Amino acid sequence: MATRKRLALALEVGEGELLAEVRRRLAHPISPIEVKSGEAPVHAVVWKGEDVDLTRLPLHLQRERHGAPYISSSLDFSTERETGRTNALPAQIVAPILVRDIFCASHEFF
Figure: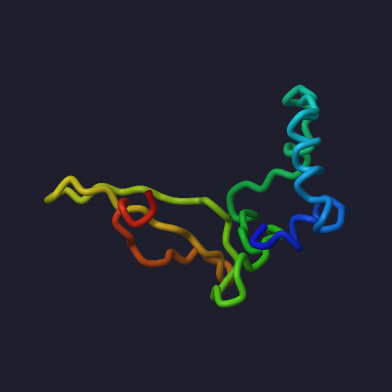
């Protein structure tokens, strides 16, 4: 959430009440509700074949300097044949295609 002010806003409390509210919520977690797969809202819209267009997803910029919206915490992994080194590849959504960012060695992420 980046700042105490933003977190307080998200939890609908003042900044001075933030710690107490977080403690209250941790002490009284909301139990999950199981929804049968066939009834789950996630299945309401299914795109297949030529209809698939990731730019139709309601994504936002994670940070003001990012060049395009992306799905947070999405990483593709690959292994270099010569070295066996694992690379992680974050993705960004641009125009009607999926554009990949730069390769980063796994130790840069983990």
